[in-house]
Amino acid sequence: MANELKYEWSLAYRVEHWVRVIAIAVLVFTGFYIHWPFITGGAEGAVMSWMRFFHSVAAYALVLGLIVRVYMALNSTFDRDWKDFSITKNLKDLPDMLAYYLFVNDTHKDYRKYNPLQALAYLFIAALIIFTTLTGAALYKGNAFGFINAAESFRWVNTMLGGESYTRIWHFLSMWVFLIFVGVHVYMSLLQAAVNKDKTFMSIFTGYKLKKTS
Ligand code: HEM
Image (tube, rainbow, N blue to C red; front, side, top):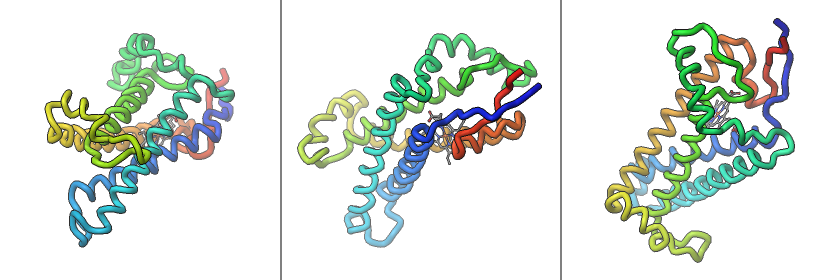
């Protein structure tokens, strides 16, 4: 069986991926600080103001990254991959992939770019980004872009979740879901690279992956 290097991720895809990773790292670090101020200076000190500032800057980067990613899925000249994210198609193929992961079958069908579990996980992460941003915006007391009164505009989120204290709990829980996703995601990329010897892990750095040609 022959393999050849295929250019899987253009620079735009890779940059967007790493912007997202940095944004999540900053959000988790600063979010932990806002939750539990571990550096002296206390809850109201200058360190806290900076942590809050970087928390919102990273949140803007994360949302912008998602908007850019959706745009690329629909309009990229490199690879318009929106069709790979069809929920019905991926749910239909899910048993095939689960049977493989649960050691029921030794092989699975060939998928163009994302296996069904992967595509559904990425869609879930996109939804989680929206949910976490909305709950974060509802907790924010200042003005977004200097003129949108966040507390007013996102009050409906607090109402839907049963009050601000619930919004805070959901916001905090969603961070843990991100952390669990990252752990599983990195593990799966390493596993796939080790089992299939197809350079999956390195592909998000270099852009290139080994693909079967016959
Ligand atoms: C240190 C952290 C991370 C590493 C090492 C990493 C690694 C990778 C690798 C190797 C791929 C390529 C997978 C393949 O070709 O099948 C990939 C793709 C992807 N990763 Fe990550 N990842 C990290 C963090 C994240 C985070 C935090 C998110 C989302 C919150 C994420 C979302 C995605 C998505 C959506 C793709 C598909 C490509 C795209 O749509 O841009 N990753 N990642």
